[in-house]
Image (tube, rainbow over all chains, first blue to last red):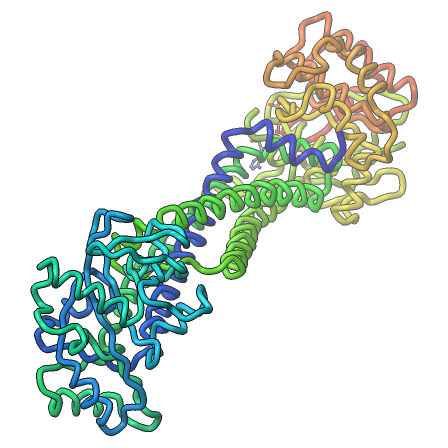
Length: 400
Length: 224
Ligand SMILES: Nc1ncnc2c1ncn2[C@@H]1O[C@H](COP(=O)(O)OP(=O)(O)OP(=O)(O)O)[C@@H](O)[C@H]1O
Ligand SMILES: [Mg+2]
């Protein structure tokens, strides 16, 4: 036994006091880290969605009824499809201020190979595409051949396998990184692939909308606006002068998501603040109670010639050990919770949810750890100071 | 070592008809002799514990000073005063003073370990436990002990560093006659070995062991 082992003996022999303090700090760390990781994941999800879209304006047929419907299909990747005349692509490309256009093709299908729900099949033109290609590049360096598909990370099929749509076998050549949106459930192929699939679906009489020749239709046109042009002006121009289409600013679609994300983030932040205020009060109450409970014990130490600073060191060591372990456990639980429930959170909130990378999460964890240890040390220090103000002789008289 | 109180007073605040304070210890001069057992008796509430705590450096007096040898102990900072008490003053406080997180043996060793120089204190601690008759409880925890056993633990602990000054506040409060004899015997022996021993007690028996006896009466100390 040495002076240094005293705090550990106190921790071991007072299990309920130990547990109470550790649980409080656990709560602090858990809410702070869990909340922070959630907010970061939401922000990252939105950012991923933004880069994923990569376009300033999306043009769809005016038959793509409500904006909601549009958002569902374009943003959330919820399976659906619509088609318009291919001629409009050229018309749009002529519009003043348009830098780049690229058509996309949508098709929804059930595949016996992977999933029971229909998946969204998105076709893009490798010649002109600026939206999907950079993203696919991250997982697949080569050009996609006909009937080659790249799948979202939720599609339950390994690279090298095949997926069957409308009787056609497609080769899975790559799997995309997680975006945290429904786009993780989509399948991407080049124009030829999707046209073949559309043709196959029409042949089987399963595609009501595409009565036309697959060579003459597109589903949407993504537009990049030239620097120096006002995106709203270009959008308006297309809406007025190109017939049978509607142009939508991607930003304005995202504002809906961004708004609810802001709302959710605020709620989480308020929750963190509330828990911390509550826990802070609790900490001081618990430490005050602890002072009273341990007054006599400390007086006995003083009688034996323990100095105030030695006692303070003992209390601080105890609280640091406890808060450190409570905090580590809280952080671990938060990481576990947020990562294992991320899909549940995503579905519940209807928002993209993409976990931060390891480095960011580690930094958040360290900050949480430091914050909870510092706060409980402050509470412990306050307890120690309060105790040291009292003469041991006064304390020892009490309770006789 | 000689412990001296010079014109010590202790004032407490309490509501009375004419004033709101009283003196628990009136101006008192007192010398605790070396190699002797000095006894203070007195009614409950007469100020005995207050005075003993002042002598022990545990309670600052309202005025006056306490000298241990040539040192005015209340002029020291907390660190120095604590070290001085650890080295020189064995205090047996009134009431139960077992530390629950430590075994009986560890409780007794604690004064040694606080400023430990690495020597092994086990042997002396074990011998002291033997002396106060609770050697068989060495590995028990204080909450498992009877009141009298905890008191004997406190006595062994106060003697751990073989201090030149021993201040005992009703050390035999919970003990039976046999153990009371043993404890007084131990304190007597410490005095015979050169320690300055102060014994605060109700026991009239103790007078057999005392060299000098004082009575505390409403904060006034008088020799009898
Ligand atoms: N912190 C305090 N504040 C106010 N009054 C106090 C305080 N401590 C002690 N007193 C009073 O001072 C007086 C002396 O108390 P003290 O504990 O010294 O008595 P005692 O002689 O040791 O009594 P006992 O034999 O019962 O132990 C008592 O009247 C007590 O009520
Ligand atoms: Mg008393």
